[in-house]
Length: 254
Image 1: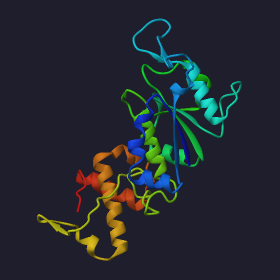
Image 2: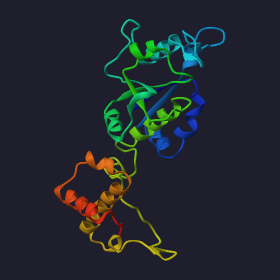
Image 3: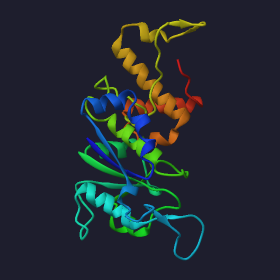
Image 4: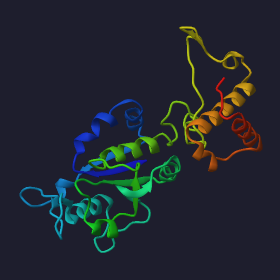
């Protein structure tokens, strides 16, 4: 999968992209992240990419000319018809739809996506109206720019690309992937400072282990994110288990 990132701060990206899982995925050709400096497409002496807002007010606004030229040049778009259908052009903005695991799954089905990182007070509205095809927010808060949200999207989407994770089913059990928070994990030693792992995990009974993990995911979601239960795909057995938790007042982890 290919990510095209448009930013005023290209130096932000290499430290994260050249580490751990994403680095290995890039080396193996599973993902390709190309970072484009919007300033390279500003042709005045100072490579100006922002200006004061019409109508007054504080802050600066990203100019349309370098942004349009950068995206159109990289994606091979005609200036007379800039909006593509096959390649999402995503503006990272607090005004966008909230980024979730479902959105990550949706984006992972594309072969190529473009991520436009805003800065300052935002972008000229004509960028929003005539260039971008989608707007995404990583949460109800404001950051100084779209670079961290872009890295968040690259990370979350890349995990869903076959072969990126060492465990081919690793992403399936992650929190939010199955509509619930993830169950607890334990590793060696089995007894640390008197805190022992749950007996079921050393039982060798895989059916019971699966059942325990599902119950723990339900308990954890019930305690921490009960709102998720409204949208989760629950079996009748799950529903009865949750009703039992409600009747008891709260779930108790084994």
